[in-house]
Image 1 (spheres, rainbow, N blue to C red):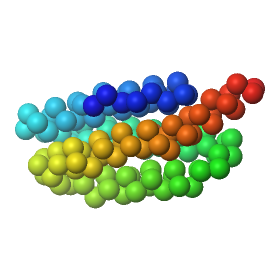
Image 2 (image 1 turned 45 degrees about the vertical axis):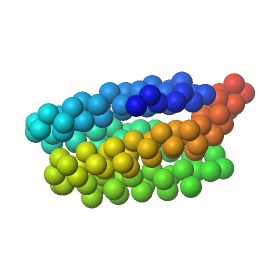
Image 3 (image 1 turned 120 degrees about the vertical axis):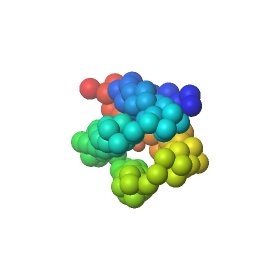
Image 4 (image 1 turned 30 degrees about the horizontal axis):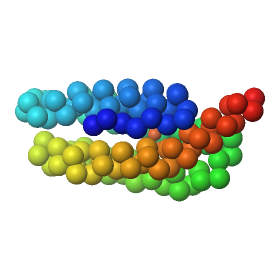
Length: 124
Ligand SMILES: [Fe+2]
Ligand SMILES: [Fe+2]
């Protein structure tokens, strides 16, 4: 999946790195190899990704902090639930839920957040 760019470069770096980690996990799943380690690595990266954005939003008092955090929390909860599932269910989750969600999330609330952070940064 080609991920969209937002107006705040540190967020793009986080997104690109996350896709690399996710692609490693998807490759393991498709090749029917053990994926526990890759799943853990991915899950940790998602948590870091979300915490990074949330800290910036809080620091600069972003107006849509709460709805943005709620979207993140929902996904953390889903990943918590999926982590012990088999590879078919996991592949289905990533293809039908996580990837479309991420695409939409980046195009909407991440884009608005990045635009805001970009303005703040220029005022400094
Ligand atoms: Fe993001
Ligand atoms: Fe986000």
